[in-house]
Image (cartoon, rainbow over all chains, first blue to last red; front, side, top):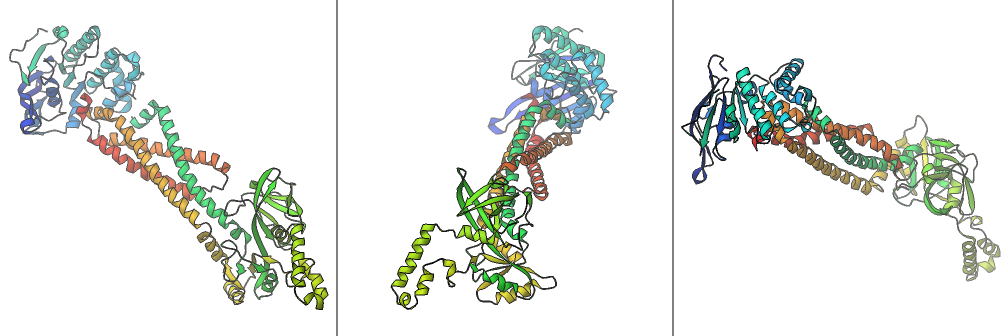
Length: 237
Length: 403
């Protein structure tokens, strides 16, 4: 991924159609967007608007039907096919956080973060100390040895954020990360994303229904029926 | 980081329980193989232990293990005179079932050719070989008879002077060894009343003829003991066991004896084959087929266990893929657990088998070769079964994390 460009994401004319013929459903219709490095962006919209589908396309999990995805200056998808080794690209440049933390249940908080580093061939000892640093940064260092089942929802999400941050990604994609948390903890997580975006320089795109925490974001984008609404509000930092 | 080991440590109790279940299943498979081998070992025990080079049996029969074989005991002496014969001894074998101390005592009685054979070749666990021509017995421990026990058989009482271990017949009955004379006495024991009736019948038959008037002494003898009548007095044995002298060809000696019209001769291997193809063949095949069936059932059960274990991890595997984990890491997670589960199951099967099999009423023989074969089968099953899980795991899409 090029370090020179200021854009973390540049998506052009993205379309996604599920099914064929008369049963075809057009989930995403000609969506173009950009997210800059260090920017925290909220992706809003009602259920079924296509937010999660857009997120999976930007995260190279689901291929778009049409369009182009450039991540950090590298063309990742174009002309109907991926242009990079998606698994390696995800491992090295992308981070994911979901509604559920999706931590590996048989690994401790520390090991969950450590695993993300080891997948990128970081040596075990180095991965362990870096994972500990991240947990400390996110305020869950004292829970490092605990299994996910012994952590609260908020703690689990912090560990998930630490895991997403492990490899210094250019882009973090978060799909309703606060949906399972109460408003106080939800806001804490959103503020955490802001800290991460501004301090680590990663772009963070967050799908959310929670309008109460919108003031935390740099910008919000709204989707409806698979399209971006034209008048997206730009929020002051 | 070894994910398989981490996962096992996380669910250690469940893993151990699953391994125990698999271990018990494998123990049953191992046990069936052991019973099969035990059956063969018991069936051929006597033939192998007797050390005879040739078995001389009733003409036209296949020997005492296949059917009834009856030979006049005099054949023993006749065989002993054949050039190349080192020794010839009578062999008597029959099964008895009697009441002893308010329980059923079932044994296969073997006659030892006293005085040359006193049972010194028997694997004695306690006591000694026979020292007297009569009323001493060497019994197997599985008969439940202790040393010094006195057992009434027929009109005589026999004292247990020696104990063997694992000497059982092809039908699993414990063996007991007495002299040939005693074995015959036990076999042909007739109650006094039956003897009296038989003597009266003989007298009555003679009185219908002129013989008792012309030769009253014959009539007198016919009405007496059977052993006093030359035509009736000869003892019958099951077979004559022959040892060939060093330097002589057993085949040639066998050919010479087989030329007599009243006997058939089998070499040691021939008698062994007859035994396996005869009395134990069906049981052997039955157990063999059942073992195959059990292996198939075990394979299906183990495959299902492994497949279910993989299914339970699909969400985590999807997450690993989303994080960019290589396929080798996911394969290792599944295969290492499968191999560990199989290995632990096999070890448990072996340990449980060692502990439980000696309590089985019949002999269970587990040899290293069978254990190695079972290990290879288990390994094969686990790799084959893992293929199902691996295919499923590799087909998982990372977006299933969102499901």
